[in-house]
Image 1 (tube, rainbow, N blue to C red):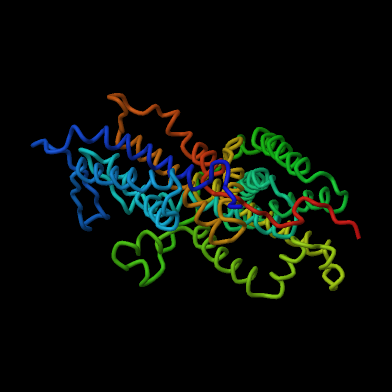
Image 2: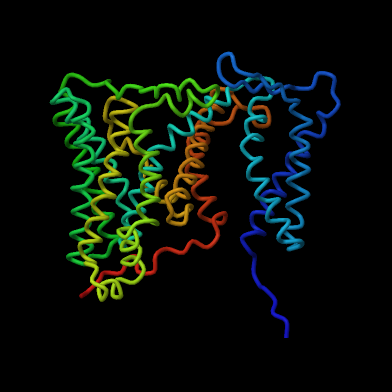
Length: 413
């Protein structure tokens, strides 16, 4: 007998999303077609770069047709392979669509938007890598937020008391590693529930860093010093992309290096094979002579050090100060980016940039004073865009995310 699939598939959810967006676009822009004073969206590409004048209504109406016509077959489960590619095209069109709609009657710099996305995605990518190292070895890490906070606070404290910003970065990395070592001791040695252990780290970080700030940092002179921009010779002179990619600050470059090196180490070295073996089947790995405890401890600490570096991004590369809870939940968004990327470095980087774009978009909307139904979008809504994106992505857009088989399971020899 033929088998029938039941329930709503992920592809149907995505198709419905794009079909609804398509309908809204068609209804919103159809009345403006053919008007003599049609609105233009001006997209610029840096100072002295090319300028693209886009007829807003025509382009948006065309995108609406694409969204609707590709969403309906997906909703009805017709021509699935073709529809799948069409939905990927819709995803790629989403970014220019939003920029064109936001810049209607105004202008916006596309390269600035890209630069902001990369900048705001940096701590998320680092946090996702921190979780990746832990969870690939079988240890759940929801303590990324706390490790970031430890790094941000103690890194800034080291800058205040020594005057050396690079010593502050090293201190942030070290404190992230120490917090991770505590997480490892609780979850690996004492075999505490790993969710509880991570929660303990997060709560401890809020209390300790708040005490540090009130007792020592507020009364200390100095601050407002950040890591300097380092342009890479020759590469920073490349038209358009040179200034965006190769005229950045050190932690941004470190993030890119860590993404590539983690991918190579995880999938092309013996060490990476051992990590994945411990995360999938620790008993089989133990039989083959791999020290499960040492592997897990090492990866948890390495992940914590990367999270500490992410914390240094907040206090030492961006703001030049420390405030209570300044990581603002970015550790949890980084965890979502890791899940979005299916526990792979490049996938996690893509997820981090998606959430970075959502945050940059909220800022861009404020600058352009984007309106909805004649009223400016509330700033509170714009500030929640990264978190709304996190919920939407995790709720239905990433499909089935399969973690390492032994994740969260304490190993008993």
